[in-house]
Image (cartoon, rainbow, N blue to C red; front, side):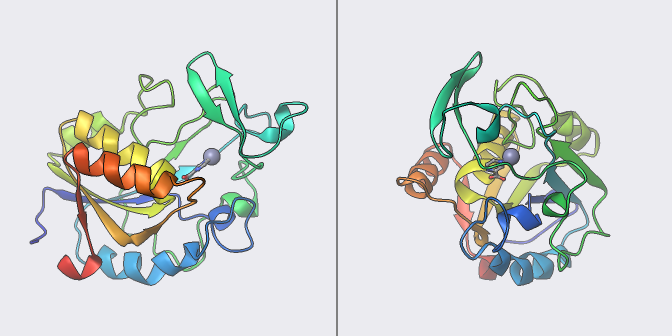
Length: 207
Ligand code: VGL
Ligand code: ZN
C-alpha cells in the first residue's frame, strides 16, 4: 500500500491505563509502540485520540452499586459494559505512554468526557449519533483514507473503524499495531464485523 497526502494515521488510546500495570491493562498493550512509532514517520497527517473520563463517569463500575467490572448494564442509549475506573482526566493513567511519539499529530481528540455517555469511537459517542467533530475536520482537510492503530482492537479501534466507514472514508486497520481486551471472543467478533463492513485488515509490513 502506498501512503499519500490524503491518508491519515489514527492512533487510538495508547495511554498508560491500557498498558501493562494500568487500570484497564490490555495484554501486551505496550508492544504496539515500536510498530506505531515506525508508521508515524510515513504519514503527513496524524490524529491521536485520548480516552478522558470525569471521575463520575457512568461507564465506571464504581458508579454502579452492586455491579462488578465487565458486566453489562442497559443505559438510555443501549447496552454498556462497566469498566474498572480508567483514564481519569488529569491522572497518570490518562497520559499517553511515555514512548509514544506525539509531536507530529495535528490534532489530539479527547473522548468520553460526558459522564452520561461512553465514547469508544473517535467519531461518535456510544449513542452512535453525538459527533466528536472528527469527521468534519478530516473532510475539511481532504482526507480520504483512515489507517487505524492502537488500543483496544475490539473496542475503541473497532468502533472507530466502523464509524470511519459510515463517514465514507476508506478504512484500514493495522493488526499488529493493535492489541485486544478480548472478553469472551470479542476480538474474533470485531475481526468478522470489520471484514463484513469492508474494512481492510493489514500487517504493518504491508504499509
Ligand atoms: C476503551 C474500554 C473503555 C478502549 C476505552 O480504548 O478500547 N475500552 N474505554
Ligand atoms: Zn474509557
